[in-house]
Length: 290
Ligand SMILES: NC(=O)c1ccc[n+]([C@@H]2O[C@H](COP(=O)([O-])OP(=O)(O)OC[C@H]3O[C@@H](n4cnc5c(N)ncnc54)[C@H](O)[C@@H]3O)[C@@H](O)[C@H]2O)c1
Image (cartoon, rainbow, N blue to C red; front, side, top):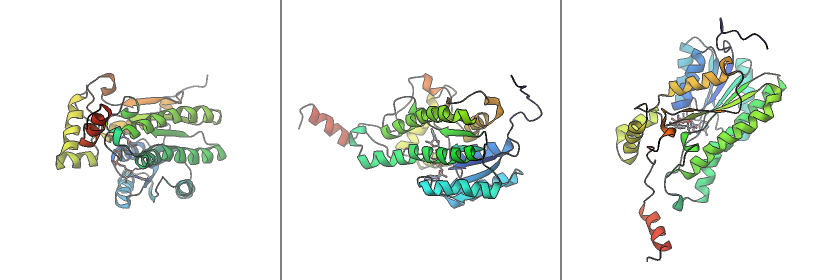
């Protein structure tokens, strides 16, 4: 067995180049900032230029190199160019955090349309494939023992009332992670998944302030957590750092849950009521009502 040194570079990330998709806000921003604190230079990828540039500036203020790239990671050619652009600007690509995703459509499965299903899968699962594939091809070509971190959700572990497509897509992210890990292991590339529970992102804070049913959900979700509060993006960013670092050198294909303990309970509130008038009408018809 080769010697495993804890010091002086505990994490092995000093000077590594990381790409974080959706790094302008939320969990992605948390991952980008924590990777920078751990020693990485970071390419922040986002469709929101203002947010992406802001994160890149925060990383430069930490003393690391950072660029912002405006890329819609749903577009495969754009993702391939993203990899080329990162290597040209920062001199490599060692770590990918494929973070982009969103529930998009909230409502009962009885009302879920095919287009909505496809949109969620395009954003939450296909983007993970596009980014992981493009990064892995480049890592193999450059003989880099890279690390890929995918981002799922606790909704991909437990049932996900009100967000059926999202839950299924996020379960798909965990499974894709396992297959990627096995196929890429011979190249020394490790692939693991971070599984966040509900987090207090900038968007969640704004929703809380705005009130309404989603604000009620966020409050209920916070109370339901065994740790008594919602997650903070830098906390789950820390898990991404761990999975990108030497500390997890013998881990691949695993999903690490960062959820305040909620998936061990039955307390999890549904994201939305599934008892909408349209859903109830369906049920009534099925049961022989008018
Ligand atoms: N926030 C939570 O409570 C929570 C819980 C579980 C899982 N997650 C997962 O964490 C990840 C991040 O979620 P979040 O809540 O932090 O998101 P967010 O909406 O707060 O931020 C997402 C960022 O991604 C960018 N983005 C959106 N679509 C993009 C695209 N097509 N290409 C490039 N950039 C794009 C947005 O502009 C934004 O800056 C997602 O995969 C989500 O499913 C979040």
